[in-house]
Image 1 (cartoon, rainbow, N blue to C red):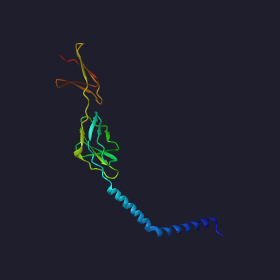
Image 2 (cartoon, one colour):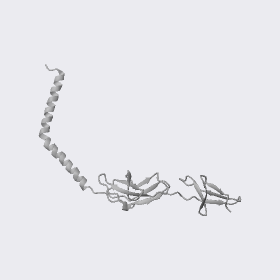
Image 3 (cartoon, helix red, strand yellow):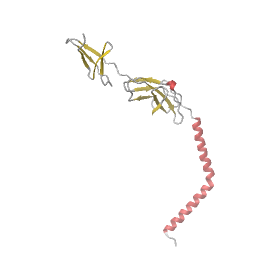
Image 4 (cartoon, helix red, strand yellow):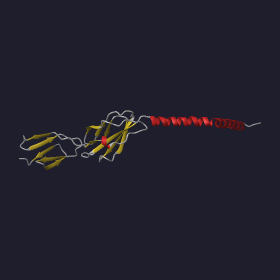
Length: 190
């Protein structure tokens, strides 16, 4: 009489023999099918239309610390890679986006940045093109100035400027004071 554990082992061995026999008979078919699928996938990759070169790249807005880029939609592109350089030749990858806009943040005021964008269709990517680059030099806004002499002194008031750490007061090309406030009294004015 067989024990229950032995019955399970016999059934397993029978199933394994059947599986091995099936594999021996069908190995060529499986390899042919998988090879055909691999060949088909390779042909799809080779025949896939490459994305068109990115055109119309421009800086549409900038502040003292940001630059907003925009470009035209590229034919066959699924996403875009954004690159930045500080010398116009050596570009570093920044980010990938599916949009035709990108905002670069944390820029330094007064430094020039160059940008280029490549198109990607999931498999193929257009090359980095320094010729199609655009640039920006983030700067501070000029404050609006008001002068009040009604109290017998020259009191300057000016609008606050985003990103300004302080203000230099210049008279006739010479710096006469510095402050972090939006008012200044020129006691030396005549």
